Image (cartoon, rainbow, N blue to C red; front, side, top):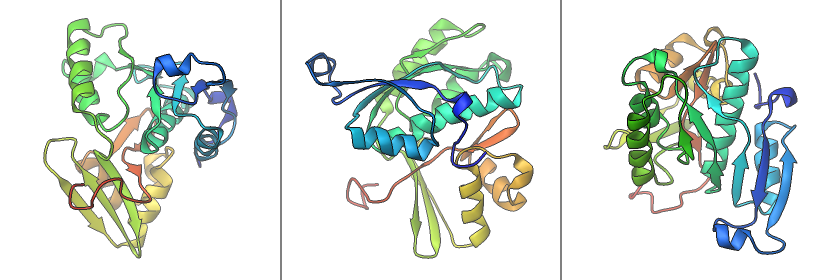
Length: 232
């Protein structure tokens, strides 16, 4: 995959000009139901330029159904929309279906892994323990803040800052092929298309998520700090 493209796998989105539900009910605030047929970066730019500050994605991020290339691509694309809109501080409304086949801690693990993204509206699905899902969603909502897991492109280096696990884990790399790996992984890529040593390091640090036959880059990109650099 490249640039998050695939119009046949794209969710649609309802969009509003404000975050607050009361304000969103006022005349002129609803931007309509939009078909997101372009690449993920293009559609996120379009939503932002239209004035969208609250976006409700159709469909569900279904980690239990990634066995076919189309299903994996659909999940990666929706996750990419959530990630890239989160990076812009857009309120994203989406639903998550974990894969209970990943073991008894599947819900807790995936909610921690994705905790830098806007929390979903619901975590549910066949075989998912409702109590565990409610606890995971509560923890996610209470612990979410912008800048929790991000990366930035510097002059000749890439830096990743990750606070999903409670402490700050910071990685700075200047090898060009690591930057190439991030570009390939950003919107999903087969493992064999990514430099092996870079992918191994990213897997070890839990910076990628396996979605069917694709590996997907978790951190979102920032172009400028929203807080003082020492705070982040």
